[in-house]
Length: 187
Ligand SMILES: Cc1cc2nc3c(=O)[nH]c(=O)nc-3n(C[C@H](O)[C@H](O)[C@H](O)COP(=O)(O)O)c2cc1C
Image 1 (cartoon, rainbow, N blue to C red):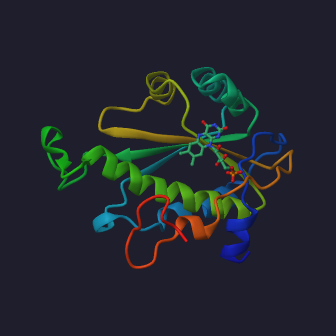
Image 2 (image 1 turned 90 degrees about the vertical axis):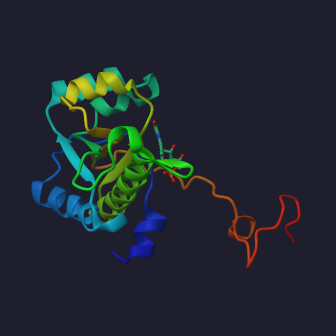
């Protein structure tokens, strides 16, 4: 599938068929995340694959009610950021300018997660990015140790719905040429 087709065809899917996600497809999808760019090529992402039904139900219980479809998707992915790699600043020195080390690692991991959504689309699979959960409860379900940021969960499976495209702002309203014009000054 062409990358533009994946970008335009991707939807957040919240209803899934029970069919198993084949391991070879999952490998290709996670490999897309592995190939994402990262600052200093540090590749701080880690991927947790959850297929076990009772563990997925525990993740669903740790999530906000509107995210309980986690239990229905055959796979949940958790995206972690490894904070303590070689060369990482000491925990008490993890700020630079307006951003923190934790934030920096998180947006690196978010790039890998975005790649995963597109690769899943190319495989005919649906995903939904999930950020609304009790973080401590999710960390406990997945035995996430200190030194890892929990960036997001993501459901994965064959779609049982065909959601319409959600609206987006026009490109003209998002683009500045050369300099940023004050709000309300757009032509
Ligand atoms: C950072 C982030 C957090 C999100 N959190 C949730 C969530 O907790 N639950 C959910 O159902 N969808 C969640 N979404 C999906 C968005 O609702 C969805 O991407 C948006 O409405 C646009 O729809 P589309 O993905 O189908 O284009 C999240 C998406 C992103 C990028």
